[in-house]
Image 1 (tube, rainbow, N blue to C red):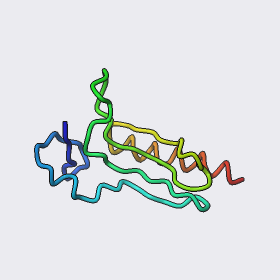
Image 2 (tube, helix red, strand yellow):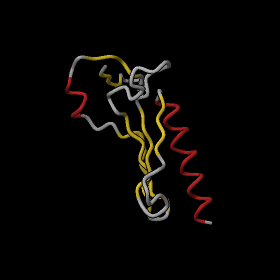
Image 3 (cartoon, rainbow, N blue to C red):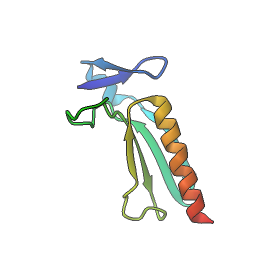
Length: 96
């Protein structure tokens, strides 16, 4: 299923593929020389499993995660912001 975000950042089902052409960055920031990126995916990455759709993803690119192993997904905009901050805080601890 395909989703888009409404004006309040709530995911809503859609059949409009134009959602893929939009900028769906929730938040990006540098921690040291690594980038933490949180985005809206448009596609449910829960793959039919039980539970809510997984529509947001946070990943780290750069030397603080050289294997690109930090990847978390969640269902809502607010969860995505919390997930992003939790990962940023974790990386900041690694820098110290």
